[in-house]
Amino acid sequence: MESVRAFFAEHAPDIEVLVTEASSATVALAADAHGVLPAQIAKTICLRVGEETMLVVTSGTARLDNRKCKDTLGGKPRMLD
Image (cartoon, rainbow, N blue to C red; front, side, top):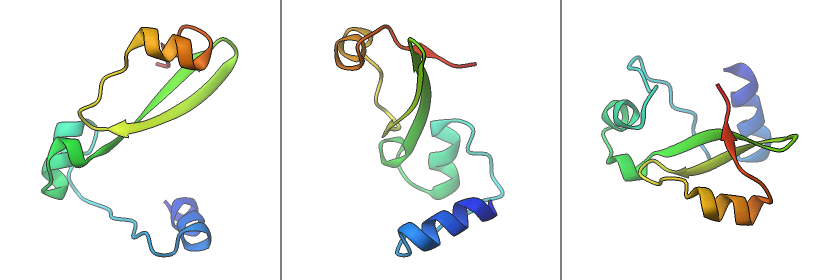
C-alpha cells in the first residue's frame, strides 16, 4: 500500500488513494463498497499475448472481445491465473 501511495504522491498528487474495509474482489463488490455504479469502477485485467504480459484497465462493465484483442495486440490474449 505504501508503494502505491508513494507512486501517486510523486506522479499524480491530485489522486486520492481510498481504502475500504469491504472487499473489492469483484466489480459488484467494489461498486457497493464505494457507493457507485459498476460502470464507474475501473477494473484491471492481466493478460498474456505470446511472451508479453500486460495490464488492461477498463470500465467495470466492459467485456473483452477476443477478435478485437487479437487484432489489436497481435495474438490471442490469455488471462493469467
